[in-house]
Length: 323
Image 1 (cartoon, rainbow, N blue to C red):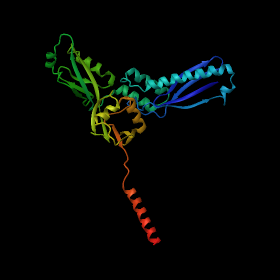
Image 2: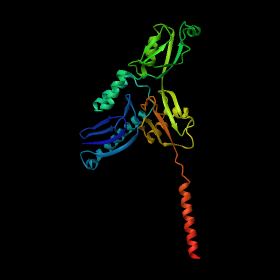
Image 3: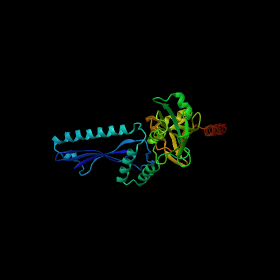
Image 4: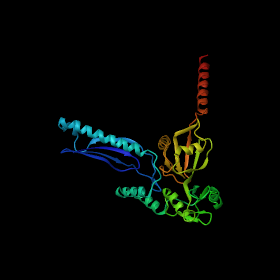
């Protein structure tokens, strides 16, 4: 005998918890996924949490058939499992750091076990090719440690570099003697380590902070529509702010995120992402994706004018007939 509580958390799959009652079966909570769309191996849907069903599996009325002394125990265990599920759901919506290689490998194992072929393919490609594409930008901050003075750092030419652009072959180029740094197979989370490993071969007292930037578009009912570069760990709301913010005509529940002609996220997802502070990485966005802020529908004056006109004509005809 078991009682299952199915909870849908989009983009996830598997079992949350299972608690056994001695001699009486188990209480389980499962969470299942609607079709999980992933971009470059990242979860691509904000976490939507809702209770789908609470129903006995093997009997029409399990609690009713149980002895009274076990009913309270069953209900207590069920509520505990529900609480565990709610805690997991809440933690899933928090802003996560950039995915590490071990994170992606764990996601790949889960995708394989659940036969999510498309998701598994994207994860393998990301683990093999890395996160960087030609044209991506990287914000670089060089700092000195130890004996190297700021003046000496300036003489190396490194302190004058603010942004590096990923070039053909997935490389970035820094001043000699560093020259090229290959980014083939490098994840966003591995960028700072990769750049520092190369720089430290020539400058022992220099450390680098490297932040990937993503070129995204915001259009529609915002103050300054256009393309903007943002760190990938920025919340989606930062893109709206860079675009001049929402106006009185903005209609967030009808807004979308698009990749060309394809709608990645509909209005309810966008509204949730903005409210929860979901990052552009967690949304699985890619360079060139477009956040379209919808505009509130304005009631036109033509139809009301026609209705008034028809009413006046009808009134005049009626008055004429009464004379």
